[in-house]
Image 1 (cartoon, rainbow, N blue to C red):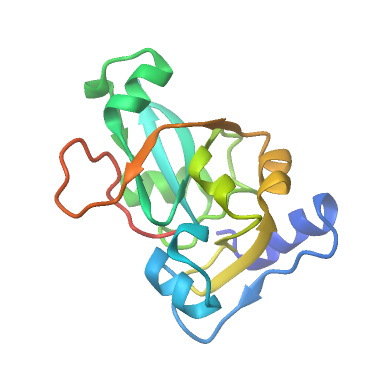
Image 2: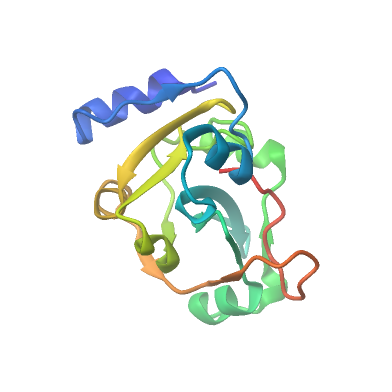
Length: 172
């Protein structure tokens, strides 16, 4: 199993000077993470693994937004019925991390990464650092660069009980 050390090694190689912070409190959900580091909820990066026609894709979603199945279907050119969020075992197997600690980098499997355009509202965002109590700050532009992600508009404002929701994990 991968952890904060794996994430830090990746950061040391690709973004020297950025450090994973292991905290005494849980940061497994976006609200917990925002409270722990004192940032807006939207500045938290939720790393969510989706399966599109069975193929894994990592979505990096702003903490105050949710992935929208209709927008993903249009973006990927498939039926929204063929898109689903991965179960926790699949997340662990594909990424090497447990739900609530999945970072945007240093995965067990190479993954295509899609980045929520709403994250660009913040010059610095906070992402999971490989454990449910680890985070690291990163400039939005650096996040795009080191993930080689595609920035797109595939989210909607997070409103509890809203129709069309696609994401099931609230964690970063």
